[in-house]
Length: 137
View 1: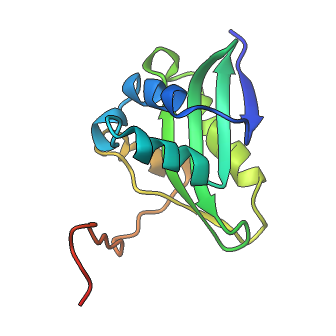
View 2 (view 1 turned 45 degrees about the vertical axis):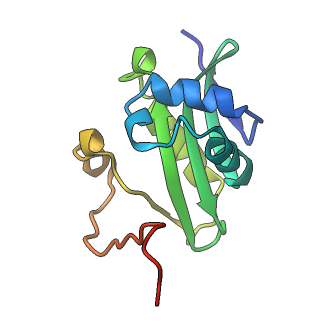
């Protein structure tokens, strides 16, 4: 099986949604809100994708300054293509786009919590989340 990797190759919101639905991420992403999903595709500033022919089978979608930090907001691999090293390769290619001091930061999906330490990630308990319906006063 031949997988092609592309940096910042345009994808549609529909392609993104379809991939998420065939991975474990759809349950934690607003896949029924096309406007939100389109904004996610349009405004991430680093995307590494994996393709089997014309089929999108993996994505590492990030927001980064390229120098200090890179938030890897979505890492998804189609369930039929998992356990082939695609996720690891997507992360490695993402890392190669970054400056030498830039660290990858992510929030692990519950099912993937044991995956990241095996790759060398360290856990950080100091993540805080402010939900959109919680105003700052």
